[in-house]
Length: 289
Image 1 (cartoon, rainbow, N blue to C red):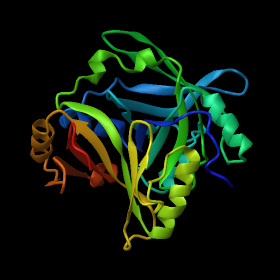
Image 2 (image 1 turned 45 degrees about the vertical axis):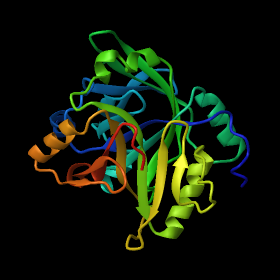
Image 3 (image 1 turned 180 degrees about the vertical axis):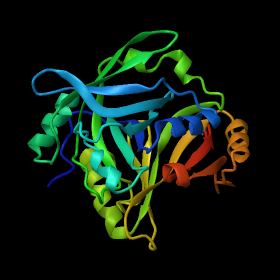
Image 4 (image 1 turned 135 degrees about the horizontal axis):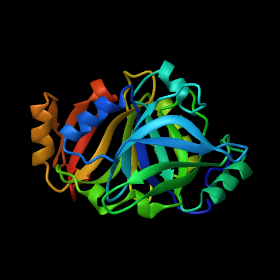
């Protein structure tokens, strides 16, 4: 397979997601850390008969000036949600949602290259903020998830972008600004295979040809680090930028969360592994790993 064939367009990082066991508990955790969360919303989907039905999941989002974080609970395991099988494997799984302005073009390109992807789907969720109210709609498709996958990959096109980034949702008490990316750790052979999948999905590999280090998206990065002691590749840290680190660090320490300085940058690593299965790397705006 020639993964260097021209793609229909560049690809960005739309959002990352957590599959969590209790949406209320996760809402409380991130609120205490100083994030503004959207109101709880239930996903719906349009089925093959054109009917709008439950997608079997509910969510809160943390909207940022670039990218966002989704906290999602599978509320109805019988509704056919693509990620229902993860409930038997692990929580904290990252959803890696890639941003496109034309999901149909990317879907057609993947089919042309005979990549295993699901059908193009139309989903929606209600949005209500002080500035607006309506039904946020989006078109997406995915690469079917397997239990050994480091992340579930999907391609997302927002059909009503004006609804999902109301000004009030972008103001966070902890001064969070942007989603910078995700770092993965694992054995070398697993990282090489994951890198091939990322390139197929639209990420740009490192210039040195190693397949390790920073894989670029238009507005974020995916970093692959070797961990010889790990048997599988897994998401290790979620990187975000903040205009000030004082609030997020003070809040994390008050909650009893372990915080460490990050070598080489102005930032703090907050241990969210117990609740989310990952570290949060809080970086001062303008710092780079």
